[in-house]
Image (cartoon, rainbow, N blue to C red):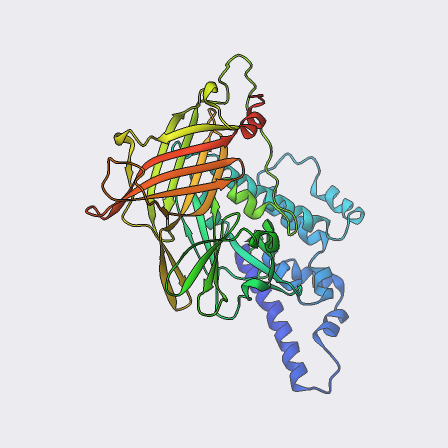
Length: 465
């Protein structure tokens, strides 16, 4: 019989024996014997011998039975054997022989080799997905396999809502949708969402099962924690249909409120791909992942250093499909044109008709919640990636945006209704101008301009403009 067959047979034997004892207990309720007492009467050596036929996931599973099984399933000899079988397969020149390691067991903590096994397993998996993420897209400047890595790691996201009385409720993800450089998430559910005015804090966690895929063993990484009280003062209504009203809660959370009840219908947000894998799994339950700070090389010769060589990739999308995707390189701002503490980068010039870009039809944000669904006109998501001259991410934003209708045309080259999009975030402003072409039944983007805080530029490039 193969090794895997022996492990399976041994596992079945242990489970069968436990079931037999449990059945015997049910048959004779007057008997004081329990599974725990029965196992306690067996010598530890026999129990360890039985457990030695189990693999790592089976040991983890059986350790949740009771305290006795937890101690037995953490035995150093068991885990050292698993460690050597898993990680020292090709290591013939081991610095310590197995016998020497066995002699060292008495000096180790009870679960030393169990922790070593887990640490090594996590480190090995981390090296694997980091190698995959090293493949960067030439169009976006971001890892091209972000979606695939997240799917392979079985990562999901949970939203924890704390109300003003301190009661916490954790919501499972209702649906998600990947796009070119971002991920849209939504939580909904009749009766599971509290009243909007009762929310005190929102916490977003990335959730990943352990490498052993054991039920209940999950690692949570805090990605965002928002105190809604100061944010609700700046809440902006960005659109509505006959069922829901969309309220934008910075930085980029959409709160869907039922119009007739003023209660929550859903909570929706979008996450940018930049460091998304790391943010989703490498933080802790209470602390988010800290991105390492890497400064570009200092250049004291080029007088325009930090003002040129930018590359922009921008995507407009709804919850179903992309509306527009474009890359713009060689963006710059002459030093003489720095104004009001901002540098201006023009990706699409209003007067250059050849740069104007059509969108795929109309703009509407589709939503779905239980059995109901709808679409809010003139709302969508914007995912923006600005790279510096070394093709490293400088500013990354994913946020809902809304179209505002203009009373007077912003361009006389088009006969149609004109709209503007204005996004303002930390150290960044984005202004877009669009025109609705009724005959073509689509929007055309006729202007796209970024304004970046000079303080952000100075900090990134080590300059003093």
